[in-house]
Image (cartoon, rainbow over all chains, first blue to last red):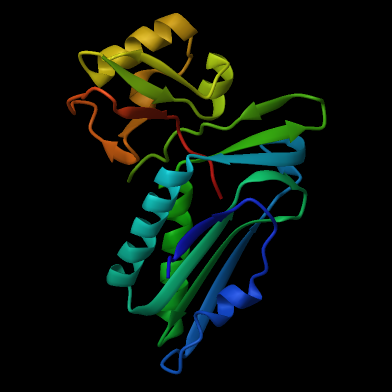
Length: 143
Length: 78
């Protein structure tokens, strides 16, 4: 079963969460990323996500495999939306199951950060003033 | 002999197309330099990653005929 996937339509979290259920798991951490109405002071009306699907799936899978070896977790999964999204819609979901909560929280945080910085998915924001643009942020300064 | 080039996000918008076929270049850096000049891309090569046939590669990787090359602008998923 693939751990990472793209979805061009709204998706339900519950079936994804169920796939992580495991009697060895004492903890599950889920992260939901939602479409927010403001970015850097500008009012946002909607978003479009575009992906280079083949490479995004490959890189996403790599991140989840890395998470499973870096952290003491049982399993992890991630789904990222593509296409046009309205305010409040679910843009990305990450789920992690683990024996204990520390590893589940740490891995979940690590996965969403890596997905945001590595997976070839781009966000186009549609602003209230009629403007729109692709976001190509500078990489965070490494410490 | 040729390669195909895929465009995404602002590069796609600036190019006005999803992809194009070009003569096989000497190198990936030479290819981006020529496409940047032709298409007026504002992103410098230092801000891009490059992928060949669906995998990230180094800019110094050799280019073979028939390759599918994608220039990857800074990503903004999540």
